[in-house]
Amino acid sequence: MENMDNKQQYNSGVEEIFSNFSKDPCLGETCKVTCPIGFTCIRAAPPRSGELRLDFYRCNLKCPFCWTINKPRLWGSDEIYERIKCRFDKYYNSKLMVTISYLRITGGEPILNRKRINHLLDLFGLIDNAIEQDRIYKIWKTRKSPQNLRGRKNIKIQTNGIMIPKFCEDFINELKNFNNISFTFEISLKGTNPGEFSILAGGLDGKIFFEQIRAIKELIKYEKQNYPIFVRGVLGIFHSKQYDLIFPQNGRMMFNPSKEFIIVVKSLMTMPRNQERFYVEPLRFTEQMKEAEEDCKKIGIITPSYIGRDIKAGKKTPIKKTYLWELIK
Image (tube, rainbow, N blue to C red; front, side):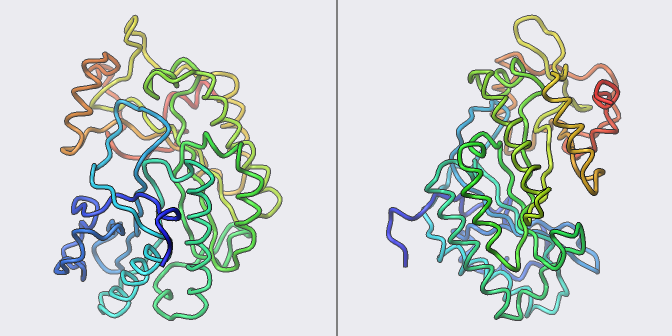
């Protein structure tokens, strides 16, 4: 078992993200109160599919619309691996014919510092070795494309990308050593220019926006060198039918793309499977986010949408289906 210094904080005991599938074989287990591995059902009817989800605690941004569940617990990478194995074992033996599309690693911020990266690399090593040895991982879908990911299981890392330029070379070179897993990096951009970033990231220096842009550029470089990664940009918060986002100083609408944003989106669109390369996430406040919603109202960054947008709140939408694409192309 790992010592305390090598452990990391994950959210645990969260029924809201643990399962939304009534047939989940873990629902009757008492260990779900502390288990850090959530399951989200993507398709409940046969053929059933879902994702396993791992939520880190703590972040380096202060986004007012964000929420995190305040039930963190320290876990070592070997302890996390045992919980992942437990989930696969239960689904494999349940005869529900559930397939796992990917393991989602989110937060908080997964790539917060070097210590957390080392923790992830240890976990990835355990998973990579187990895939070859244990048949329970057969229910984990194998990638068919693009070529650099073919034959591998997918791990999706959702990150704001700010620390990637600092750690990218060593981190990505380590990922190349794995034989059975690939990595989709979803870089969640906070706005389309430095001014928007500062507001949406809780008042941080707008110059940090350019670290997010650098992160995407760096990762594209490695993907082009056939590393087992797939790079995707996400505008982590966007207008929706529910709310528009505005500058609190003057009520002006947000999302006026900078040239740096336009360049990086165009770069992503030249990559294979370009229909999957950039999404926007329209703002939605769930029941768990009531406090965040009130905070955003007090700050003055949201206003009821009056444009009559056709973008459904909470539904990830390709950028080509938004007005932003007209400004970019």
